[in-house]
Amino acid sequence: MGRMNNPLVILPLLIPLGIGISGLIRDRAQRQVVAIVGFGVNLAACLWLLYRVGEAGIQRSIMGAYDAPYGIAIVIDPLSAIMITITAIIAFTGAIYSAASIDANRQRFAFFPLLAFLIMGINLAFITGDLFTLYVSFEVMLMASFVLLTLGGERGQIAGGLKYVTLNLISSMIFLTTIGLTYAVVGTLNLAHLAERIAAANSSTPGITTVIAALFLIAFGIKAAVFPLFFWLPASYHTPPVAVTAILGALLTKVGVYSMWRVVALCFPRDLVYLQPALQVVAALTMITGVLGAIAQTDVRRLLSFHIISQIGYLLMGIALFTPTALSGAIFFMVHVILAKTALFFIAGAVYQQRGTYNLTKLGNVAKSHPYTALVFLIAAFSLAGIPPLAGFWAKMAILRAGLEAGQYGLVAVGFVVSLLTFYSMIKIWDECYWKPLPENAPIPRGSAPWTRRVTMGVATTLVVLMIVVGLFADSLFAASDSAAAVVINHQTYIRAVMPEVIP
Image (cartoon, rainbow, N blue to C red; front, side, top):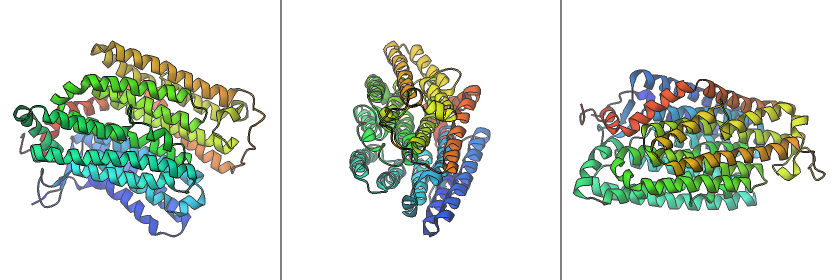
């Protein structure tokens, strides 16, 4: 007989599902209210689960009529709890920002239900305990995100959306094939059971598990937009409304990185040792190509999109070094960069409402006409660049310190130089958009409603305040990320929580 140890762990799935069903409501205003209230409830539920995991340990629920590994395991450990909480923050603030900035036509075509299904897929990826459900979550995310990217039907959106869906379908094919290979070798798809069986498979079939781990890294690497598999991202993320770009840019690539941590680090730690040199090279190249691509851009959304790639390189360092310090630093960095990147996109959207363009050559003098917008941008940009005492400084310091402890001085040097180049690219935006005189070819401002600008800047300010709080109370987040990293590295803790009969 199946059992549900804690049925409340499925709230991060049920609440977005309920919001998605609101697509049946015809009135647009009512949909907005349902979405904002619903995502607020989802945030409260995720905060409670984060507290519950901290107090009582890993929470799980086995769905269906069988126990693990045969029943579907839903597991919330410290890493999952952090990820669904930061996702809930972005979903809630993104819903408010979208209600104020997304045009009526897009909202009429089920924008909020699509956003809800996207969040449901992301949450499912973070809390599932088996590989096939992880694959299903990727497909849910892919369908919802593709429609969000192309909603509006503009030429650029369709072209970008096709590149996006093509590369992600290739990733899904590799992932599904690797799942089949995994089942053929070890006979299970439950992550806890897999972690327990892979050790035995390593001795009986040496080499095969390393190939499987490498295939998983390639599949997740495409999702995460690592070098050289990232070109779908800058080709597609600048095409939809900025609210969509902000939400996708903050969360989707992070699911790929999370999957590397959860699947490869948890289940294939011995094989990871052989793959670490290649991962370190990929991490360095991802950082370098991302930041150089950002510096070359004159469109703010393209510039920030390339920065997503650059920041993924830092996250990849966590698994490339694979030490408790490195993984903990990468988890801290994940929280920081999600907040920073979303805030910067939201501020870019507010500037667009004020000036009618994202092109830096046509912008100027925003600091004089909108000093508050300039101040909020400056704080978010400094955090992304790693200026103390903001969250980005502690995040980068933790990762670079882990690199020094591991003796990877070349990788640390690359991370430090990329941080300086990130600062340069932020100064470029500051100089072009906020400081230089308004050029003669500047477009006529679109004249958006004052309440719209107040809402969008209010949401961006909220995220910037969170970044300041994270920076001032970094010890608390480091304690949580240390706990999350410990569970990923010590897979027996995870196995014991999901299948206590295996390791009592």
